[in-house]
Image (tube, rainbow, N blue to C red; front, side):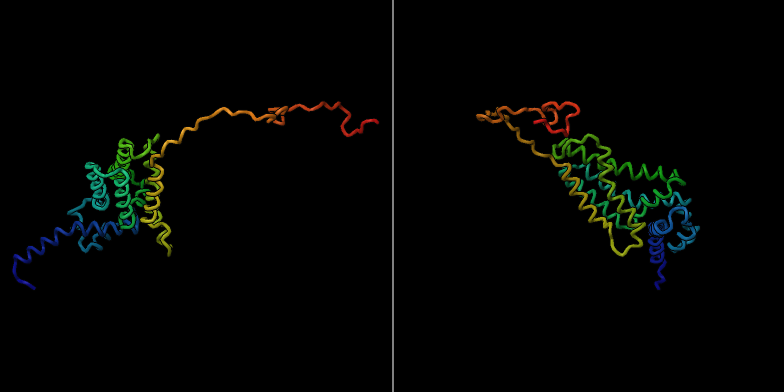
Length: 258
């Protein structure tokens, strides 16, 4: 072991700078395993290899710790998407593909457990749900809305009557994949909701539905010339409206007298 005090100081400084990330990684793993309510800060400190007092130097309570986990695990992806759209040099279809593929990667990572945590515990922790809505959900919806609007304005996508519900329909399959993987998927041998496969199929369906269709050709109607004797003497009314010879009451089934 080196006795150089400068080297020991640098090593301690590097270790100190790494602690917040180590704490956040331990917290994400425990939140994913146990949920927000059942996770204790003592356990987070133990898994991170620090004392509880050290943890409190960086995060004053469990909600602040969870918010920091969300900011580290999910928000950078949203920021990259916003920067991508600020340039907006690529076709809208390619922008959508890049966004959705990045979210599919998140679905497979430990961060994919965060939506399940929020949905399951939002009723008991409304402040947590409000934070997540503003920090993640609203920004994600805003990104996809921008892509759709850009595609329509450029003439790449067909016009949409209900932009907001179109965005929700695009998000729903990937959200389901995240929820499934961190609930039922934990007990399955086969990956029924593979995020990449779901993303691939969703892209095909959405982009096909948004594609502009060529206008249908206009068919010129020409007046038909009746052929000789065609339909001559035929009653044009439906058969149920045609009148036949009246049958007098009481004569049905009776044979006419010779």
